[in-house]
Length: 251
Image (cartoon, rainbow, N blue to C red; front, side, top):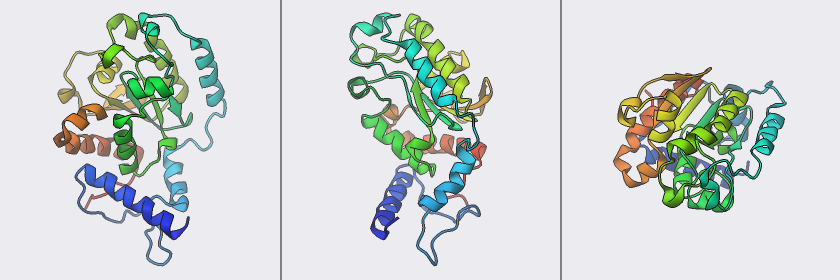
């Protein structure tokens, strides 16, 4: 990695941490910082260290194929009324062997146009959340409870969730992540089969099938309520600890 590119990457990483209230950094044992060769926490070399913890390097190579088969089974879905106004199905994307999976509620306008999850303003904030954890978007898998945009970005209705969610459940079973981070109340309440408020669900470790589940605020909510970013960072740190990742700012 060139010095200029390295510096820009480090600046973006620090900015991402600043958004979540981290005001200082320590040098974790697992990562050798640049004293002699000017390397940062997210250089290509140190990425290998992180990926040993995050990716299933010897994982089942058929996971990508299984996800592709599931997407083909979904087809040009017209199983619920959401298909009537959608432009694109947003199936999900990321590393099939990821140990960390983010699950939101449903696509928004930008996602509906591009056919990809979390690509609008909320998606940019999610990218910063991922970077603050010392990871890249390609290290994780991102999906939603429903695959088509609800009109006017309303919450998915019960019948829509009931019809669409089996595809999400199958995605989770194929990927089999160590940690799931549910983004927002709809995702957390569905996965945990509860009506408990997100403020009571977050800050704890839950279980979903074989995975630990950490609930936190949806990035769109954080854009409207930036004071809650510190709470979200505390949730991300819970997930990082479960994954064995170094936590920036920890004394």
